[in-house]
Amino acid sequence: AQTVTQSQPEMSVQEAETVTLSCTYDTSENNYYLFWYKQPPSRQMILVIRQEAYKQQNATENRFSVNFQKAAKSFSLKISDSQLGDTAMYFCAFMKTNAGKSTFGDGTTLTVKP
Amino acid sequence: DAGVIQSPRHEVTEMGQEVTLRCKPISGHDYLFWYRQTMMRGLELLIYFNNNVPIDDSGMPEDRFSAKMPNASFSTLKIQPSEPRDSAVYFCASSPPGPVNQPQHFGDGTRLSIL
Image (cartoon, rainbow over all chains, first blue to last red; front, side, top):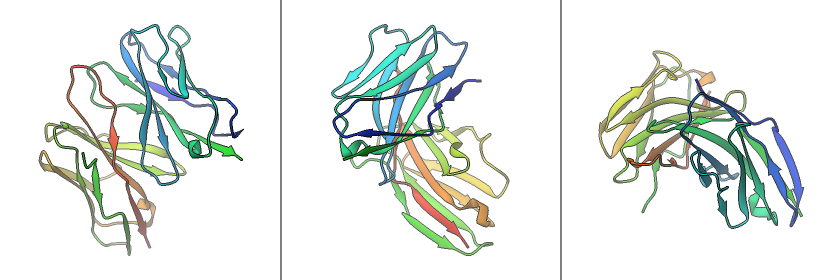
């Protein structure tokens, strides 16, 4: 079974600065997908970024980027130029290829301070 | 695209009562997931369906919980009888078919309080 570990329950960052959220996972699969989801205080969970394991290039979506280290089974999320609206809980998730479900980490609560 | 629609948004009821949570997935999505979120346990997958068929219900906590998906556009999660420890936020999510793995689209959740 796959496991996803987010070792930082809470983090904070000053507005406009950069923060990195860590995620590690354990799997024997070679092909899989990784996701970061954001859950703001409004509750709805939305996708931030995704990474296919077969792609060596790190995914980037505007201010959000990942550092995917397949050998180390690490998938960290970097948020640049943090904004107050980035305050949320962030979940890392793993999905095997052709699997229906994802395995989620316990989440990291990020607070962006003005 | 209306997104995943859950109802009610909030539910407060007394223990022992039956509770029914409803979900309408995004049209065209063939996976539907029910999650429970609490401070203590985080996000737990309860059950998921593919093409209206339950695939994995190993996360359903006990027989008091049941889920159905009578058609592609509707699913229910029922708790009978409810207990205070069932208090949580329940999320429904859906995702489209392949060929590549797709992220899940979540509803706004139902905040359930059992008194």
